[in-house]
Image (tube, rainbow, N blue to C red):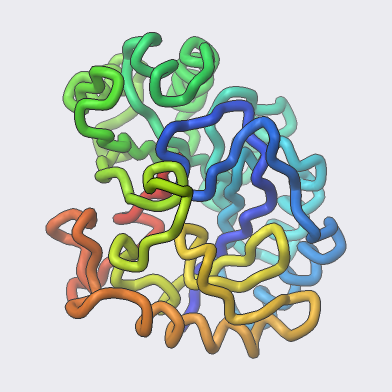
Length: 278
C-alpha cells in the first residue's frame, strides 16, 4: 500500500551535479504540470490515505507554486518533506518548517566539507550557501535528513570527511546517512535509466508523479510510466506502479548499489534507505 507520494515538481536546478539521476540543471523547466494539476494530485493523495508528500526535483523551491502546494499538503493534515539542495531556502519555508515541527521536514544531499570537491560534484561555487543553510536548520532544531552520496574517488571526495564536516555544522549523527551513487541519468553514459539500480521497494510503499504528469514507482525510475495523472486518476495509476517496478528490477529485488540493509524482505523504506542522486 502506497503511504508516501513523491512530487517531482521541476527539473530546474541552480546546480548541475555530475551524477544527477534525472539530469536536472539551470536549463531545466517545470514541465507540463500546473499548480492546479499538482493540487488535484495532492487532494487525491489525501483521499487515498497517503500520509506523506515529498517535494523533489530539480530544486523544488525554484517552482513558484511550492508555497501554495505546501499549504495544500499541511491543510489536508499530511506530512511534507522538501528535498532541497539548500542553495537558497526562502524565508517563508523556514517559517513553515519552524511552525509545523513534526509535520514539515527538510532533506538534502551533501558531498564534502571542501568547497573545491563540492564544486567538482555540483559544477557550481555554492558550498558556502549550502553549508550555511544546513547549519541554520541544525541550529533551529528543524527536522533535517542529510544523505552523503558516495561518488567514489570523483573530485577527490572523502565520505568520512563529508560526514565529519556535517557534525561540525551541528547536524546530529542520527540525521545523516550515506548512499552509493546510482548509475542513472548523468551517472550513466547517455543519461539513461538502469533498472538494476532501483531499490527493491520502489512502487510498493511509494510512488512518484513527474513534471509531465507521469506516475512512476519513484523519481529515480522516471522512464517507467503507468500513465498520466492529467488523464487518469491517481488511484488507478498508483495501483499499477508496483507491477512496473517488479517487472523491471533484477531477481532478488535489490540494486547492486543499495546498502546491505536495503532489501524488500527487510522492510526497506525507500525514502529513508535510498537517496536520490542530487
